[in-house]
Amino acid sequence: MISYGVSLYSYTGEYGVTMTLDDCVEDVADLGATGLEILGEAHVENYPSPPAAWIDGWFARLSRWGLTPTCYGSWVDTRRGGRPMSVDEATAQLETDIRLAARLGFRYLRPKLGVVTEDLEPDPVWEPATERVLDLAASQDIVICPEIHWPSVIRSKVVDDYLAFIQRTGTSHFGLLMDTGVFQTSMHVRRGGVAGRMGDGGGRPPVTPVVPVADLEDILDHVVHIQAKFYEIDDDLVDRHIPWPSIVELLVRRGWSGCLSSEYEGDYAPGRAADQLRRQHALLRLSLES
Image 1: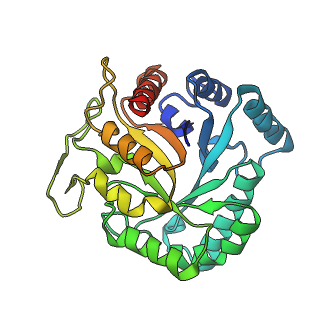
Image 2 (image 1 turned 45 degrees about the vertical axis):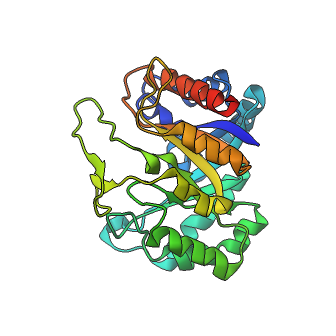
């Protein structure tokens, strides 16, 4: 079964400026979503040690609006302080976020690490640190799911290493998070931004190969969460950057079950995220019904 959610990252342009956490959560519920995705450092008060009153308020919001926590975003800053992070430090950061994510009711944790290549190969500490926390993840019923994010592509060393880790450890507490920005067929340019181009490049931004949606089928059995990245839906409910009909068709045909968690990264004018999120959910629902 496919459900609909929203990442609060979508409200980046307004969160803390014109919208509070309550405003964002209410808007997610109002547009008909049931899943809620957050970034720990950005959205949790006094991270990583929120007061009891904040946690009580968190669950009160979820209950009031009928929302389910889906994915918790963790930031493992492997270059903090101008030096590489040790495996022990990365492990400690992951342990902190796993415990907090579980405490807040999340099922999935997306670890975001520093990268060492232009196609987003993660810092090598990811593998030993992740292996060390697998038992904790199992005890907290958390699935760790690193993100496949543009300009990474599906057929790449990045993804091959993740799949090899799953095979070697045999764990059911590590999977993949698919960001649909990987499938963009043309670049969206924010107001005042610089255009890039898609094409047959070597995987270095702003030139990177167009990734066929068919490649998703190769890894779909390991995809536990999908960030439905998008930039703009026009007045006719057409997305000229992300091929939703092809993505939805594949998910339905393969019987994939999980959350399509909207992540808006277009222009951040006041009110625009709320409007664009509603357009995307309308588009996704129409695509699933067709």
